[in-house]
Amino acid sequence: DTEVTQTPKHLVMGMTNKKSLKCEQHMGHRAMYWYKQKAKKPPELMFVYSYEKLSINESVPSRFSPECPNSSLLNLHLHALQPEDSALYLCASSQSGTGVNSPLHFGNGTRLTVT
Amino acid sequence: EDQVTQSPEALRLQEGESSSLNCSYTVSGLRGLFWYRQDPGKGPEFLFTLYSAGEEKEKERLKATLTKKESFLHITAPKPEDSATYLCAVQGVSNDYKLSFGAGTTVTVRA
Image 1: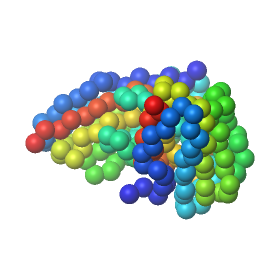
Image 2: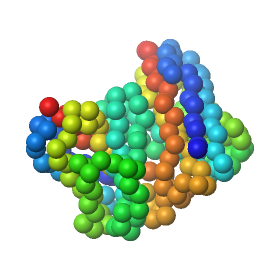
Image 3: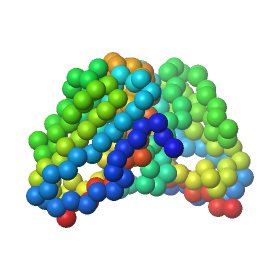
């Protein structure tokens, strides 16, 4: 079991649906991340929150909308997705709020399928 | 731009047959090199951080080493439960949060 919890584990949604992915950590980490991983590829960074503020947006389309309600929670709101957005969405956290020299701790991801 | 190349792409081992995975990197200034293990359908699991050339870290049957251009992950007397994809990532001085990942090495250990 990991210390970063993601829900749901699996999600199937149509292109007109709105859904949200949730992530929670109770390690007191100050930075939280969203990554996208396609099959047999490494994770790709999407967003970083540091001290609950958005620090990095890797030019992600606006159909993905992140939210950090507090230091332990991270959400990813999904709307009008495309089939090519189907992937494993990983949440991670790091102890350092500056993201320097601090290993990432990943959750087990949400497997998203867009139909 | 920081770059990471891992080799081989896939490695099939017999139980007990030791081997090494390679991670070559180019980075403007290395802040840290990270090794992760990923099982199918799960998130990467953190293994090691290495910061400077000459550094070594060990955990059970795994040992990671670092030079100025590459890192090795040595697997000693592997067991079937060591089967996984091993990912290497670097953080350069120009990136506060972003890691550059290699494509990974998929290790299969047969009993």
